[in-house]
Length: 358
Image (cartoon, helix red, strand yellow):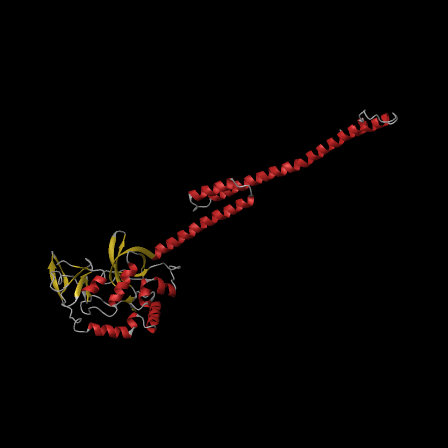
């Protein structure tokens, strides 16, 4: 087409070459033809240039759609991605106009899936080694009551021993009251994690456990610092409320607890503070505080049990949270398992006990 127009243009040049001077009012057909040829050529070149551009855009669009389909397919393979997250990621991918952003969303979705898997594995591992329980009562520094699945159990902490507060022969021992109050305050209305060693219970049918306030990072291999600072067993020894004891076969943390005790001794903490012990012994043996503990079997409301009949101290009932003084009806009827001794009424009230009416 262009060649034909060029031949025509040349012919016209020869035809009009001898026609004399140009008439300004007469249009030059040669120039018009040349301009038309240039315009046609520009449009053809433009069309040729646009063709690959359109093809590239079409290819890019197809690639983007393919990338979206592939990404959404990958989401379906993520087993632990919950429905809400899956729908959220799918919507974002469909709205995406950049394949790189699609890739980032897939990576994010995979991370969310992996995080869930990791959390589930950790939870399964924790369930294997630890059991959750709710503390319902504190009996003394190393013995508590816990609730699991609606059932209540007595529990004895493993690997350590706190001083007695209501022993039938020993009476109240040095730092026993402090240990009891510390355990009570630490565990009041708390959920804890129980770890079994080898034995299930002791001869008194109390559960034998390590009591963790917060869980260690590796449930199979807690570190020395974790036993010392996160288990109640370790904390009681660490702060001088208990001494380390070993009763095979439950010896998982025996070495740790022995080391913790050694540190507490070197720092004269609690039980190991000889100055405080001497002062306590002096006060205990003073005429107003000295007594001999006695017990007897009694039957009350059809139940036969061993009651504390010691004369002298103010006696509290751990279950009723009431205290009795000599002369009251209930003074000699408190079970040795529930009795708590106090030197004065004020001391009993400071511990949260109220006076009994009888």
